[in-house]
Image (cartoon, rainbow, N blue to C red):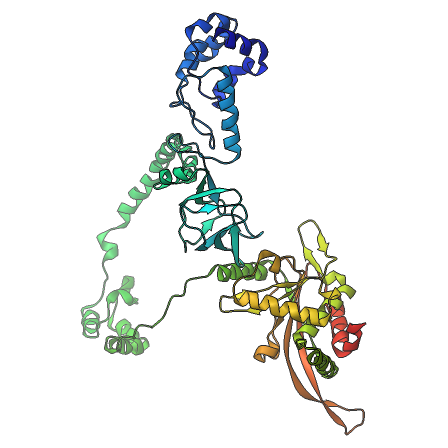
Length: 542
């Protein structure tokens, strides 16, 4: 032991600052040094006595594993005696455990706490939709532990390390779990599972610590109370003389009193015009004449029958509904919207669509919808007017090179906006295929983050499916514009001659713009380009 301590003192520069390490409470407890090591420590004994008020050996002997506070994530060490090499081996291993996130409970074996992950940029909390593993199951990297309902979709959560699922902290169906909150515990050895039967996560205790800091402040509150008491005292003194019997008394003539009693009129509601404010007969008669209608209407209220209670059902908010509400409220409150509407003739568009669908049916492909043509036209217009393919930040306007179109899809669970990436570079059949695939995933609530993130512009179509003529959509932040598509309807339009009239199909579209990013002239220029692609659809194929 003397040899080991001499090696440590002569060759370890870190032990020169042993007092600092002990004061920071990050040193590991040591109880194995014998008294024979004391002479070899005399060179630093005076310094330690001054700083710690007792000798190094006394300090080390008092630092047992049971009373030394350990930092979070480091497992407590055994109290048996250990030599120098054992000490450093245990210290290094304990530091490795802290990196891997193991608990500091001395009565528990090494384990890992799995927290609620952040599965999207805007996610702050999530719900456990379904556990695919149960307690005691073996897990391996890449295996799905559970399904997490995020703010936009239901996502599978995979295991990162091999081991056993010892404890499910958040049961299936638990809602509003904050990101980082512990949801499960895994262990390396199967025999350690039973030790976590009644386990409670340690992460639930630290938040209470900061609340204890304001404890020294009560003396200040006492001073405030002492100052406030003299201020309230004069108010009490001044209020006493004001309540005199003479001021509470109402003076009225006997005839006025009798007339008021016969008509159930309180004298306090009548203003007297007699000497010194006395109420006379004329005052009561004037009051009855002016307020007669009200006094006659009041007796009928008690005869009214009770209003039957409304029959209703409270529907709990889903995660997607809460996120949609908060994002749209944020959009309308912070983004200065303005709207531009234009009517586009879709006769040529419908003709081109019929020709393309005949080719698709002949080759066994899927039919192309009007919405597919609208997405393609919007993407090409964004490439021609890139100012509309931007977003606002406090420092700059970010203009995107990629044209990624979000498509609004309504489902039973709520509104989803999956994204068609690089829509300007894809053909109509490819766009239609992706839209159908993403819409089906949205209805099944199986969209992944990559299916709806990264959009730069949004298209919302209520015309074809619902027959809405025209509407104004709310911008989807952080985007700067959204296009609202109405239904196509036949209209009578003037022909080339004075008495000639033609019938054409027109579709109303409205562009909602963020005025911080898109000026009115820029929005009009984009609509002009979009209208050109719709009315001459052959240009989209070039």
